[in-house]
Length: 244
Image 1 (cartoon, rainbow, N blue to C red):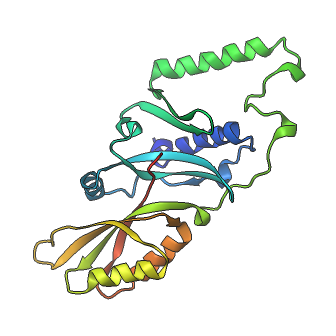
Image 2 (cartoon, rainbow, N blue to C red):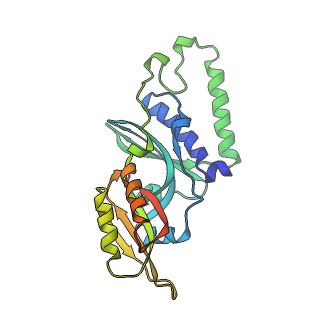
Image 3 (cartoon, rainbow, N blue to C red):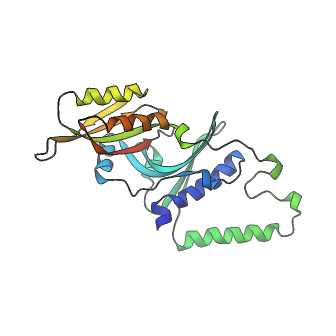
């Protein structure tokens, strides 16, 4: 169960998919992997109010700077088909230069789906037993001399948008201080929610959706935010993808 909850299983899968898609070596040790153990119920509720659902996604993407390879909880618009994938079902969303966006959906767990996958591998092995090595299609689609040396992008250089929830003292000027601190790191606000104060503690939750920015900029901004006098140390952040 830990492999599922901590995103390790998804990390294995997306690492193999990145090798097939981009012709790079299998590099699980360079994947960024974050599970769902830090998610709180209130963030699921706030995300739904903003029109999003939270899914544990494995993402790999080719960029001019390198290959993104990451697994983490992600806000995705509720209107996207992939947002409705629940239970034991899995989906793979692919965006190609010619075919555009396609999605493949099916059971990802259970005795019969697992047995079907194992038997498919056994049949594939037996079919190749009589084939000459040079006539075989490599399991990861690319011949050894065609493997690319494009590097995996460090997580600090990945660009995405964010959901940020901070607990603050309900006082004048706190919203302006938060907006100014984000702006100082080059981060602009896309949407914002302020939830009701807690019972008798004069505190409130501020929920912010940002525009796209680099991870390192967001890390700098959150480090500065929690130093503000009106901001409590505990906060939640979830990456956001529109998947278009």
